[in-house]
Length: 241
Ligand SMILES: [Zn+2]
Image 1 (cartoon, rainbow, N blue to C red):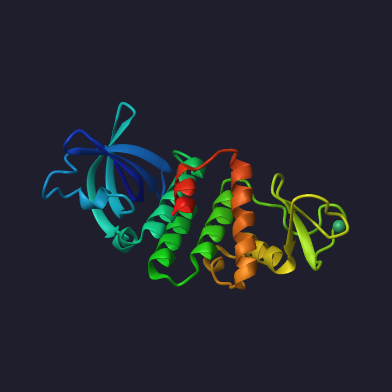
Image 2 (image 1 turned 180 degrees about the horizontal axis):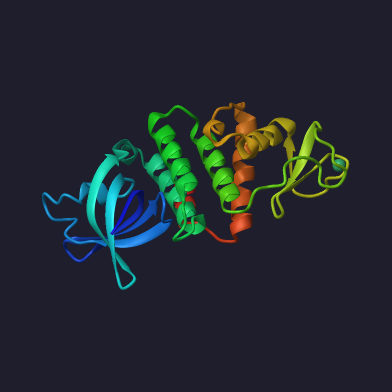
């Protein structure tokens, strides 16, 4: 029996009463598990295994299959469900976790990142675009795709009025050396540095004016799609809204 905290990042009905879920756990990475009887009225595991429930879980393993035997909710993020934009963004975050978080390894940093992001989305304490950009850059960094953001990749210059961010390699270039990638103002490069290099407790604690935030948002999304070389159904849906 495994006892761990976990966030349900995907749920699917399985028959009339059961559910299959994907869980981002604290200590054991991504686990795909069955929940028998989750949809029965009065089920004790039901609400604790819904999408975006963060719960204390007791999980058993039988011949490579995982079964959630016990679940107790700690936080359910119900408010997210009232806003279609927020739930769509949360589902994109979940899909990025499924893509990047490992199995059978400690994933506490991934879990902290998505829990903080969902909390900020729910409390509306940060701009949605800022939350999305910080999430994308941070999860990419955790997954081994940290951009090389310290200085111009060619001459080592630290600052320029504008700099070029090469979204296919994650390098930056000064105005004299840059001929490709996205040309962005220094404020955006500083924000990327802040997100990637700050203590993880502080990554959401900055602000940008609206035009710079828009550019940051384009940059982090382009970088994400370029690094992971795939499309995200949840992201396409978010943009449709
Ligand atoms: Zn240079």
